[in-house]
Image (cartoon, rainbow, N blue to C red; front, side):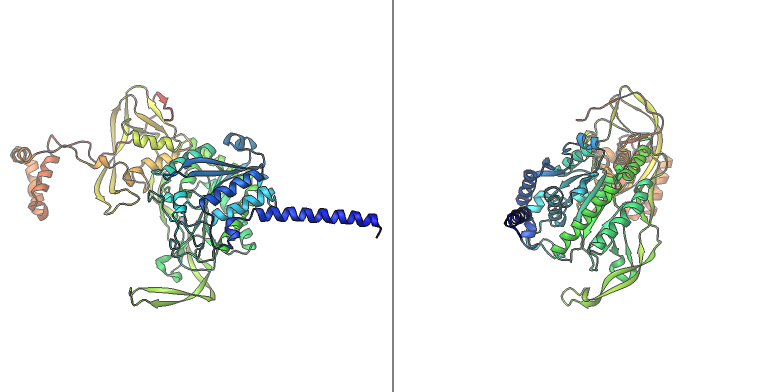
Length: 597
Ligand SMILES: [Zn+2]
């Protein structure tokens, strides 16, 4: 070796050492809080914001933005990761790339996706080990959606979960579950989310959770849009292009996967079943916009490190799949969008039930003993992790419509229901207003057989009723709001406004005044009136006598008897139990668009 060669070699080796050192320092510098804590802890809100700010400084591909503010005053953040630096919806759309939205910690405490997303953005945008994942994709990340719940930490918030030690609380500071709030949109967080969603209108959506439920070998469980609430082009794309590829990638990375399913009757040998996401849920909402969504449910009984790495594998596989299939995904969405905007003419399913069919599958579970608790007298399974076992069980994963409705041409909403009309605005529904009076043939619902939920659910007392449709001709004044169903958001409007939908706003209890009688009638008015009605109307008397004989409770109740005559009197309130939204069957008259408030 000449001295000169030796110097070159030394310089080269120093250079290599320097490059190695810089890379190592870079990696070390961007160790995520969870990695640094050996996966004992998840990143706090401040640590998460700080980490993404540092990624933003280190990479021109990362931008940290705010899309709203929580009730406790924390910023709701959206991280945009784009190799084109397309940090606005307009610029992003111009690139023609797939826009993927990954949402984390909507249920605070279910944090795996938050920590996985930090590592993933680092590996894409800073170390660039996975830079190619942005070749055809723009990545949007909500690091923590339920930010107030995330900071409401305690060691004992998730009893069925193996770490981290600082898991947050499921509900928001206002004690509402964000993943029941998509269609009704009560919370400030959801209202901000809806505005963000409509600005970006992502092509694909991922919602990261952690499961509860039985123990099994699978680390990554997930749902994809293969059920009939998704349009056919999306179902087909998911079934043939997304699901098999992503499942294969995640399993090759070392994580067993299975569709997110429940034990039937709590008994594994009776089989497992999936479900159709209703529009109160994230993926049940995004599919109303023809945007496929994946619900990831990391298995709660796997340790935190395994879950974060498994969540990372699922996100990376999704990005890889979207990169390779951007064109076909966009084509499937465009096909579904054009069908929706042209008007849905077939019976539209508002809800679903299992069709009873099943297929036999191999299910990777554990042997278990059934034990008895003296304290509770309950019986519970003790899973034997030393004895993994593949069970041959039925899998129930196919559904048929429970309730369908043929969509009208449009809905007519009297302008006084401004609170509900505002909610339609929040959902990005295009609204028009009558420029003059309209007399038209419409259908209206009468809601009878009313029962009330015995306890509040998500802050609502909910009515249960039978919806009976009546055809009538009515005149609507100028200013009545028209919801034309030839628009991309038609399915959102149908689910919100058809009273038979389980997540319709009247079913949620957002329209309860229509069930209330408002005027009083004094005893000294109704009692003599009832006597005179009985004398004057033989048919009424026959009805009353028959009711007295057949219904002893009624016969003994003065109030019920008074109600009987009141309802048949000229003072009866005619609006009670009539749902105020009318279904317009004919063509739409002259209207004027309403500006978004
Ligand atoms: Zn959850």
